[in-house]
Every structure is written in C-alpha cells, then in structure tokens.
Image (cartoon, rainbow, N blue to C red; front, side, top):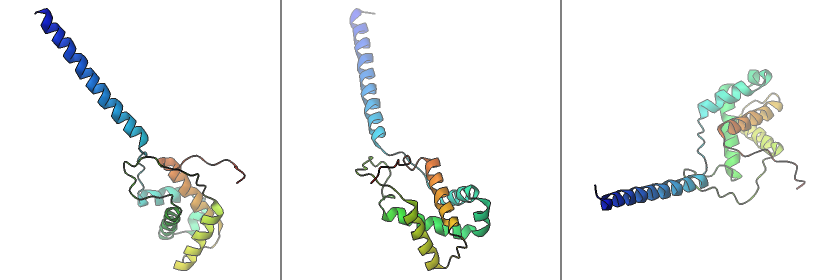
Length: 152
C-alpha cells in the first residue's frame, strides 16, 4: 500500500477516536449531574419496614395500617419539598439545606392516624415506622447523610 493510504487510515482512526472520546465524555458529564434513580415500590417498602420494626411494633400494626402511615409520611415529605415531581433525568438542584426532624413528622403522622381512625396503641410505634422508613430510603440511596448538630 502506498504511504498516502496509511496516512488516511491513521487520520481516520484518530478522528474516530476523538469523536468517541468527546461523545463519551459529554455523556459522562451529563450523567454525573443527574440525580441517581431510586425506585420506590410500596409493596417492597411495607415489607422492608415491617421487617425492620421491633417485634412489639410489628404486633401492634397491621400491614394496611403500616402502608397508610408510610403514605402519610410520603405526603409529609412532599409537602416539605423533599419528594419533587419530575425527577427522572433531573439535574441535582438542591439549593438549601433541608433537615427532617423526627418530632414534627411523628406529630403529623399521629394526627393523620387519628384522623383516619388508625388506633395507635403506643406513640413509639410511629417513631419506629419513621426510623424504618428512613432506613429504607438510605438503603435505596434516596437520602443524603445524617445532619450533624448545626446549632441552628
């Protein structure tokens, strides 16, 4: 083969490599800026939380009551801006620190349970549900790290 042919083959290989490197680099950068996908499936959540609860709480809450409490917790998170809509391929755009305190969510869940007629025999059951639900979020990668005492 002639020298000109080898030069064209080498130039074509370099151009193909550059195009591939640019495309892969661009996609890697785009995916790095996008929130990871965390799939929340209610049946899986109820099973996880039920197994995570202490035996005393397991004995006092039915699966239906547990599912309702988890739904109320998700509604509370949504009201606080922690469960946004349209999260698929959304850029990570958290501009402010949001801290979820157990006291406010437990009070909300107790009020909602009373409103719909769920008989909560011991308030610690709701605390255990919240802790187990947050553990599930941590397991699927849907929450950030625990906050340190910031003396707000």
